[in-house]
Length: 121
Image 1: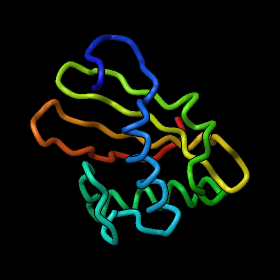
Image 2: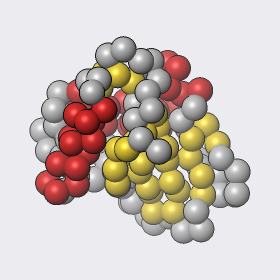
Image 3: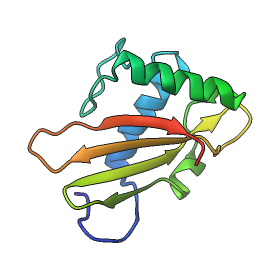
């Protein structure tokens, strides 16, 4: 269960699996999440997927499967109606990079995570 308060929380283990699958899709070049179904995650529209791909490409270090160190910094926070997730991605040369995956989850029954962007804050 995700907390509903004004504090940042580490992402719980049951949600880490979801973000690992998103990162794995990015590693394989599936930035729209079209080639696999990820439980509790919405596909990403093509224009947003292109922006994510461009952001990762501009970073200059290919993304890799998430490593354990990611979870020391990955957080979520209640934002009055939805949860916001910030997950620093792993790259081939960095266990935890400056590339951050930004996603939200609405407070609705059967809501799905929506990936909004990948950027360097």
